[in-house]
Image: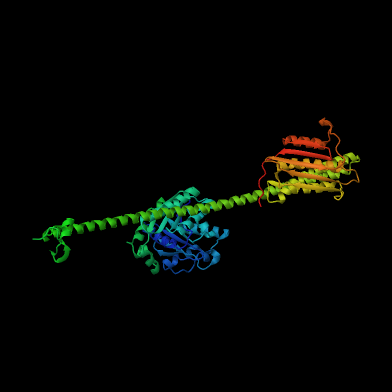
Length: 252
Length: 309
């Protein structure tokens, strides 16, 4: 008799533009999910310039590139940063890893499926841009979370990536998380703007998962290489991330 | 006694402050009477008014600031939407241009193949000449070849130029007549050709029948208008006398045309073709045989677009 395995939900955190807080959100969101007794695997999908390990002060021995090249058991590369939080570190400073070939993609898909069976959530932190690995991770995931700031360049890049994913890759469900928001009104304006544009030109409805306010605690935590949700649990940003984790079931 | 209208300056004691003011002014302005006791109350009202004014100014400023912020946010959103709209327009424009370029290539390819097929038909007729012993039959085959070639030339010109919809009819006539001179082995020094055409561009629908008509008229002139060693001139003039009409004139100074038979059945194929095509294009044919032969055909033609420079 075959044992029934619980399938984890695979979340892809992406943005188009760099520097909008994808990695910081991924790490803190993952920790917030573990507080709800979920087991979370964070995959550092930034194949060229990985830094999830930096934010968590982890010492990396094997990364995605090593297991892809050697074919070793991917569990060897897993690092348990917290009791319910595992990290599959990415490679850094390896240009050839930015674009994944078909063979590497199917191999990586097999690895992630293999190791994710014991987790409730898999969160993939993608690189910036529209490289082949970014597109593949978005296709591979169950839910796509777009991090964007109220900055028009961030909105433009997010729109460009949404357009590409919807037009060429058949993805039509996107969740927005606004970062660095100064006030509820600014957040609503930003969401409204990008929603109107995607509705008008792509005929797509976007879901707004929530917003993270601009907070000095975040900057300080990044400098200290500690997740802000742990360093300053009472900060506005930490409370917002907890709220987002509570709403994870509303992801489209 | 103090005069009523006199202005007195006195020192008013008010709390711990001392103010040197015109008592008459204070009295007139109604802020207080000159008694020190009521001065205190009036001063309170002045301060109150100033505070109310300041609060109103601050509230107004805050309200205005809020409106400016809201308007700025709306303008930013509109700007973003416009930028995205511009990007989408550029992308669709590029897509359309790409699609147009593909269609143009396809159309050129089709014209090329039509021309090749017509040339094959012409070559087949040429090959059949070898099996024809009757000189009249050879002539008929050669005439058919020329007709097919005149059609092929239109398609050749269409794929060879940038405008796929129209051909330069003047240039076409030059190519067509050169082919005919070559086909009938005519020395251009013996029979001179003057071609005068305006800047006329014709679509395929119009160019094919017009080309066939010119082909018949010039062939006829080359074959019959001049005695074997005689020299002469053929004039071709094409113009648009008014909008929607084309006038084609083919004239020679040869021996002149005998009266063509009225019975259509008895006419040559060339003349029947000219009649039929002219009628199809709702045109009129006038033949003048006073000095040589002059065919003047006026046809209905769609409005000629201005040529791009």
